Length: 280
Image 1 (tube, rainbow, N blue to C red):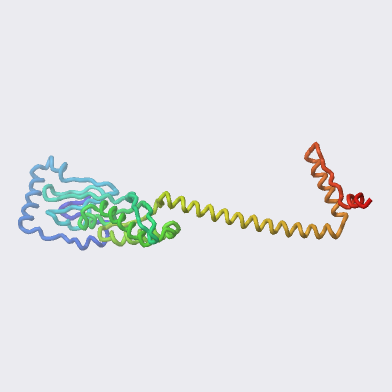
Image 2: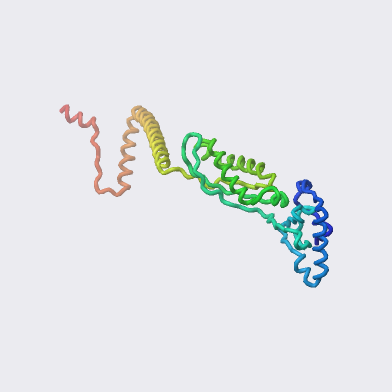
């Protein structure tokens, strides 16, 4: 429990809160604080309902007393006291927040128009800076992510965008984290979700890929024909050295045909026999 008269207690916001020191509120401010405390004692039976606030485990409460950050930084989580009428409370969610970067039409380095969208994960690590240094930290981070995505991908070619998505995500995370550090924001992760190409470019790339596959298939078929011709030449040389090998191959072919249950079998006539009949 944190008492408003003794300060806000320890904070997990880090050393950045040291730059916000409690300022002297002056005589008028002291009078207003005294009146607020006096009202709490006068309306004591009802005052606890108006001077006690609870924030959840994942939240921090930044208290501005008469417009100035109260000494001790952010309060919470848990139960704490504040003074009505002089304290203004801003509750900050410290959990990880994610948002989608709207699709951005980007002209790449090689003059190709692509549509890219991404997702960003960030969390607030310094509640005081997120309240004092920026008006709306979530909106500011979202707009900065959009401009960073456009500026980064504008220096990349289409092939680099498609092949270096992880490197682009890491670079974008580093740039966003450095730019949002004064706001008390920690960018945890950035991911490029989708890269959409124009329809005419998709058709052109598909035609190019198909032509490349056809050319590769023809090369493979030609290499197969070359290897088959070499094998046939070697087989012919072996058969030419042994006439009995040709007869064995002939009988093996007849056995293969007979195994297929064909009703008609053609017996080739040897050329030498035909020459003998022609001579007679």
